[in-house]
Image (cartoon, rainbow, N blue to C red):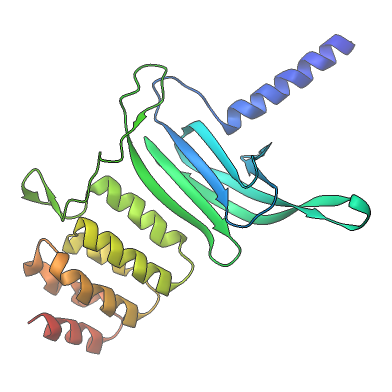
Length: 239
């Protein structure tokens, strides 16, 4: 009976680990780095499986693509050398296929996520090879054609926008991505939907004009604004 109980306990632990970090050779694996910006001892919990980090950083390989539940704990010292794990973040992190995701938490901005594509060149049973130049800044051109931002880069960019807490952070993120990668009017329409205020939509739309590959379609942004006056201002500013 004791042997059966120990075996069952071991199997349960293994199944819990596999559920948190599946390993299927040839599947669309990614890597994930979790970092807490403040000093101290942290523990990261992914999909119910906890692993104490090395200080404030945890590196995970062969992470299954998808949305993962994430909790971050920080060790708090108390009187008489006792202490406890205090939860400082609870939410989700999205891991695209063949990507390296860098998620950084701080108490003011929350979880900030950066996604870098991976080159699927690891072969069967091996993780993809990281190649930072796989999707270089393209200024909206792919193979000599005007296409706007690379579709995979654009999806990662949209995800980061949705993770940002404030419009001011979104404005800075959008300008940087558009300046380095170019954008199409159709993509810009999607970006503008992520802002809460018309003034920020106008700011980004005016900035993006010089980096847009199909400027002749800018009139399509007219419906992206809550107020007619802002739409008119944009049109007047580019004419």
